[in-house]
Image (cartoon, rainbow, N blue to C red; front, side, top):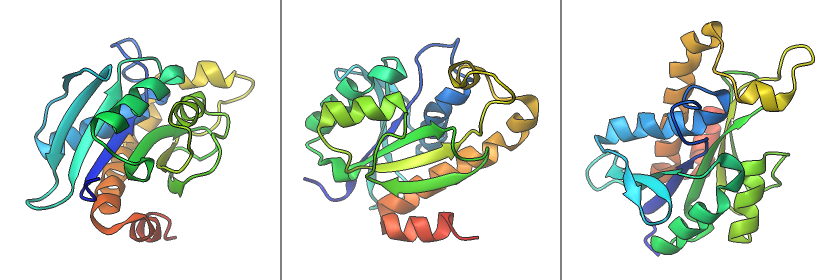
Length: 193
């Protein structure tokens, strides 16, 4: 296994109808990274769109992926990507939305359960492990009695869209830091008060 290679999967749903949804924040983060790496997403035989590049010369190689499946069945493409690139799950970073974190909050976690997130549930089932890095991007709880499923499938509110670029940039920074310096260094920076 190449220790200098990381697979970064942004979770979301395919197609333009979902592009601005809260549930697609993972896709948005890997789009920011692809722009930084001056790389374009292309179809891949793992049923994903993939872009590759390095943040700096000689730095870790990042394979950015957006599964072409709906989020709740992301596991198959993620497992196929790990096999294709001969990577262990310890070199997998999954970026996903998190209802339990306030909007514009990031947390980095390794391992643990799926917390009710169906995309994570499917990845854990398909890979047979929960031993991978997660970038949890806070989207907050739905207002009032709005069902969570409806909330995540709506676009960010106008007030949120003003701060969304900061959240996406911070998440992209965290991924680059994990790849270059490790999870602990990234957690210390991201989780600092």
